[in-house]
Amino acid sequence: MNALTLNSLTMKKNSHKFRTLTFLLTTIFFLNLTSCGKKDSSDDSNDDNNNTTTTASNMTAKVDGDSWSAYYGVYGGSSPAGYAYVTDNGNGTYQISILGFRYSYTNSTFSGWDEISVSVYNVSGEGTYDLSASSSVYGQGIYFSAPTTSFVDYVAFSTDTVNTGTLVITSFDYTNKKISGTFSFDAKEYAPVDSNYVVSLTEGKFTDLTWN
Image (cartoon, rainbow, N blue to C red; front, side, top):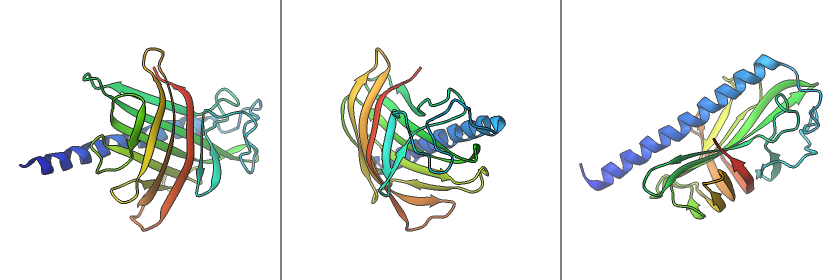
């Protein structure tokens, strides 16, 4: 087996890991939310119909030009819903995933959500990283939307070798477990069907996300 084949298999394996992590996290959050039913009465972060935010979010972006902010309204009221997951590779590099969840409500009842996920497999610290399956650091951007409470009704988009983007880590404090940066990417629909539709995420920003 030549080096090119091994590299291809490695990237496919990493892709599977990141996508699996994203969907597992989505399922966990979905189950928690549906068990609660109603929005916390103290939550002022989301309007019942248009998700207008009144408190600064720790992760924001634009999805096809529309403003997007990570928020949930069940646990902790108006708390932001951006998260970081960091794993030390043990060789001076890290695996990093940035995830943001936005929950929607209709008449104070949970009615769906969407999320943004940005992952890089081989991060050495602050800097710019490609979100492309062909990259040596292996980066991936995902946009996922479930407009109803049914997990069956969803659409998912991912970067690939053609539709790519960048993640810029502006601050990476491994000691205090805080990370900040920006991102942008184009992602092609791959589920539930593999189509030619591409969603554009721009002006992505995350600030002081922490991890355990």
